Length: 222
Image 1 (cartoon, helix red, strand yellow):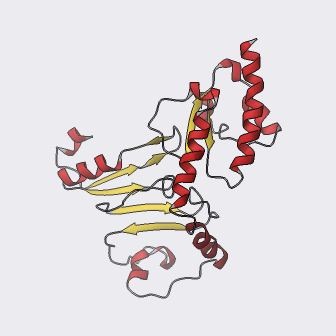
Image 2: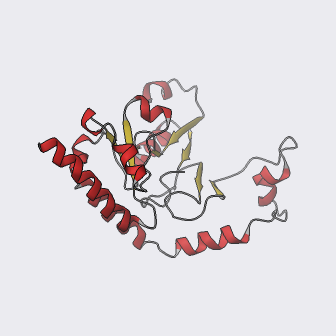
Image 3: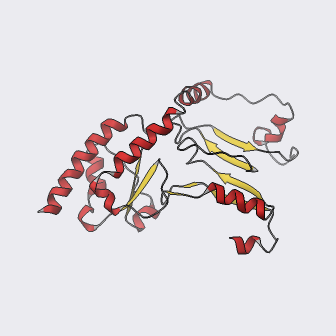
């Protein structure tokens, strides 16, 4: 990346902070440093990391997030963080023209239930950061985590590359009411499944998960 930025041909750098297809969390501080060094505008996709871990968007030109991921609220709201906005555009619908709002236009109506739900979810912070970290550490203690895909993890998602001895685990978990990430084409191609820690019923789900996986461990030992 640095070698490309050195050409001076770029004005923007767009990056994903938390990348869920592998569970990788890119180093935001390094990205900020590169943006400053080469005088480019840093734009960050924080959709999957916002609320999962504390971080600062200072020195980021643009950033995006949503309500329905780590903060534990209902899906339906998008958040855009910006240092500045371009002038209003006649080619954009008014409800998508963020500069239109910045200039004093009356906002379009948003669902009150979504706004209230996000407000309630945010009351759990900053304690929720520690809660997610504790859940993450609990998952790491499971024997199946020996097959954890070696990426830079963040406390929301863990990726496991299944060996043949766990070939049916996705189906077995689903039959027992536990639905983990694994059906997407990009996950199936690499035999990945992913465990999340953001659901409200985590404790009960974790107990059932541990019980079901224990049967696999017994078979392996035999």
